[in-house]
Length: 257
Ligand code: PEP
Image 1 (cartoon, rainbow, N blue to C red):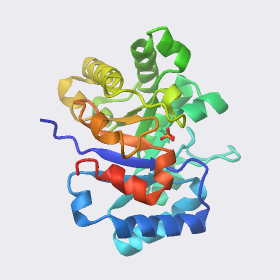
Image 2: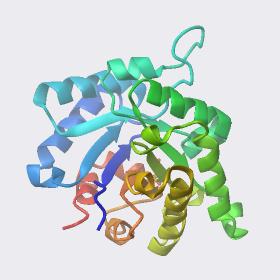
Image 3: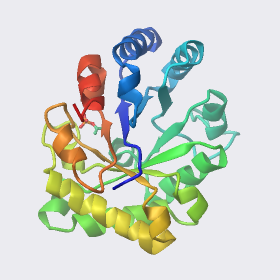
């Protein structure tokens, strides 16, 4: 029986301005009851410009919704125009920072080396990185999804200590399933999530590996979340499109009902 608390996180991507973010989080907070937070962690991952709005709500109302950023700089401060540092996110009391989302890897050419620097930057500032890994369609068709994903994991975790690793979140997101409506089967998700935990055990020992939360992401909806969550190595979901619909996200948080 796993002692890991599932993490249901909504990645808003580049959607919702800071006023819409307020309305969205208020609606979400109103819909979620104490029972919903019992044994499930809930988080939202808004654009940078919404974080202050979300923080104000969460601080003021003592909501149980955590929040984080969709990216962070590998650097702590200085001449990096347009970047946002881990220190800035920590100051806004973010809990999480997504690293290496496939859209960043694809559209901003983020390498494993850069993701690794961002993972370490997150840890330096007390943030929990959500390290995204996962294969594209060509890799899956070639049957190399496990090796490809483990290579990304190894690359992202260079020089990360066991003490840091046990607080990490890994999101397995097959690229072909993101925003496509094409969801991996529960068995597909388990195959790779199980392999990720196996590699974490090789790197850090079984005790650490057993603490790491591994999310699945890719067209998660209320209709498919329960089957995916029933897999032994899946500890939550990184939800994109469906997290923009509050009612649907609430149904996803209630995957056990
Ligand atoms: C994501 O953005 O991480 C994601 C999984 O998107 P979607 O749920 O829309 O596929």
